[in-house]
Image (tube, rainbow over all chains, first blue to last red; front, side, top):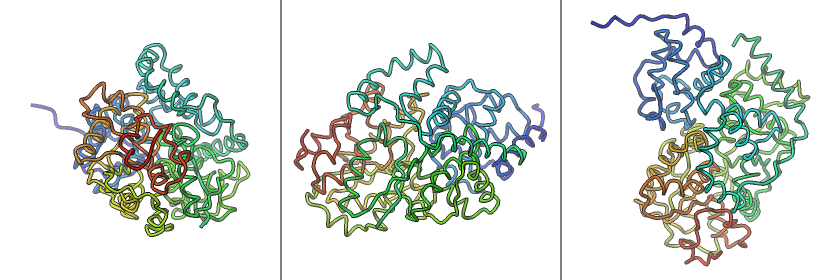
Length: 192
Length: 293
């Protein structure tokens, strides 16, 4: 006989404290998100299952799951959830929390960090710069995979879809960074 | 009609044909566009996953603050940019605590936002401000007989469900396709996900979604797909070669920005069509309408 499932609240409390964390408490395990998700087949656990891992305190399984990283922000689950849980926004929190804790193995985590560096670096995102940062972070195996996409890259260049030169940084870059820093301080002050 | 215009990063890169055709079409329709000075990245679907929702929304709010002195509605062509700017603006207007927090952060950069603006999606503006009649009146070369799959994409109709259309089976863009003289096909995948930024990290997702979407358009007899979203356009157009490698795609499917098709129907000069940027050639499908390379 299998052991009855016991709720362990310690880990759950940590996640409920995130910006959109309280919404997770409303999940009634109906599975609407599972059937609505565009990338469910790629996920180790569906969002519904992920919330169950949270309730049962399975911290490692939770953070090692690729669920949040597979979310493509298509908003279908957010529109359909009968409990009104903004699942996409919850996934944002889980991604940023995972990065903060150092769970950054999935390639998407590197992509996100590369994208963010690109924003901080010039205020706008230049596709060439983004790809360079991403492949540098991922190392040789990913570069080799990227090489398989060289035909696509060549076509993009031939059709002038990738500018050769990056755009100039925005004039107010210093101000933009100051704004973000202040926002991050305020987040910490709120205990998130 | 005057608008503050938020082009977004993609219009400086992969979505150049969107920018060129939109500016030309906007001119014909007397939509005065004024680019928001020194705008920054909206954060895409990514910034919130690194620094959290609130700081990412503050980043988006910087653009609102920069646009406010002009007092025009902000028109946004890219679906992700629209999502971030519109959701931030709505939260700013509805949530007192959030408003105070955003104001305080903006102050660190010497900026101020009072929350007086509206953030508008391009297709919604074309329908509700410009109007279908005006669009129809601007058509010089009706695209009679052209069967078009209107690929709205995932975020546009779902940011505010039911505000201007059905979040799962939107029809508002089909009305523009009709106004151009073309025939919108049913195309039930019109608001399904294209695979988004997985195109770089896990291209199998993008090619799989792309295959399903293009097949659906083909089954319904479409000759071209049009979309208002830069990400959707790139994933279906630039990745179509890879889709063909991995799946049995019967034939090629040109993927245009909605505004490119409008520029053709308005009989604007070829520079406004901006078709040289399209990777899958649209010239065969559009030959009956005098569209040549």
